[in-house]
Image 1 (tube, helix red, strand yellow):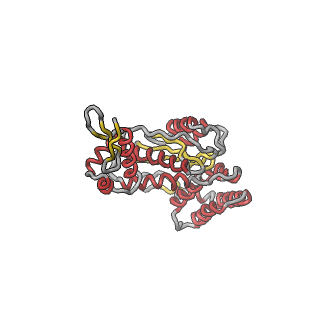
Image 2 (cartoon, one colour; image 1 turned 90 degrees about the vertical axis):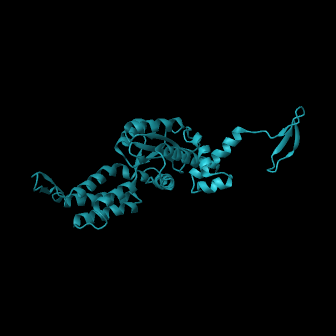
Length: 314
């Protein structure tokens, strides 16, 4: 084979000395890589299939056929290269009986992920095993929304690691139960206490909050015990169930709600995961609405791996 000029596209042409045929050397691996880049460009952005097909001088249907082989590929995380001092954990539900659990660090770099049927103790344990395989065995703090199975798995996998409960989840859930404009005085006072959580920056302010909350508990102790009786079943039930629910929420959250004051440079919320990872994923799923569940899983996995690559490049 000898060099024999170039094609119109600039590719090197070769000529055989025996049969005098000319041609170019084909690289199937390079072709597959170019198609995969095009696939991720369509999957992980708002680029339309029609525009990409026009760029490649083909039809959208033909392009989809080229993409078929990439849907079932196993997408594993890149070996983690961060410090792993802070571990932020959360899950994103794709549909009933399909959830993706995600772990990122304090810089927003995905560490690993795991697909499961639902958020429970077993699925969180599997995620933590993957986290440890990535080299994160001793984080300084774990930040999460304190889902029951997650808390149990955290105590099992990282028994001596402090836990920071996401303050945004607590405030958001409390406001949903209290509403923005509570009609009774007890709800109005409790809503003010909930809103004051974001302003806490020192241990002195924590003590003030706890004191005011305890005063509220004493003031409305009997009020929260009031019961109503159903006219149909004659069964009693607590009249102020939403207030009692918020009371239980705050009482359960307080032990892990102010860990960020004990350990410097850790977040008090999972916003880097909720807003920085989950939110873009949900936007992409809405953009590609109508996808099969397996395709949505592939989208999530490829998005997380692409986020890893981008973070490591910077």
